[in-house]
Length: 125
Image 1 (spheres, one colour):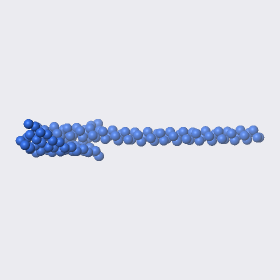
Image 2: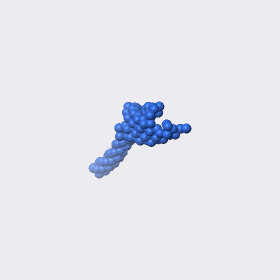
Image 3: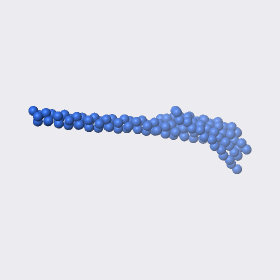
Image 4: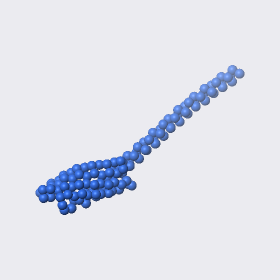
């Protein structure tokens, strides 16, 4: 009976140790899985923001291209853009002066929660 009691106690201790090890290992796997999911969400958010910035660049380029050759001292331009499924809108104003030898401009674009604004100027002789 003593040998059986010793064997049963040792087996129970071994089983408890193995169970604790397995629980800890599985807990670590869940933590790693949670971290992986969080990182994937963050990468997806960054990718969406980059796509919006690309769309804003396209919209701004279209806006400026349509005001550059217009006659008149005051010019307003509009542009729309799309990049990887994200859309953007841009609007800008340009003022020419000094017989069209100088100009200043301001413009902005939006896409979802992203926005940008810019100013510029130029001279010619």
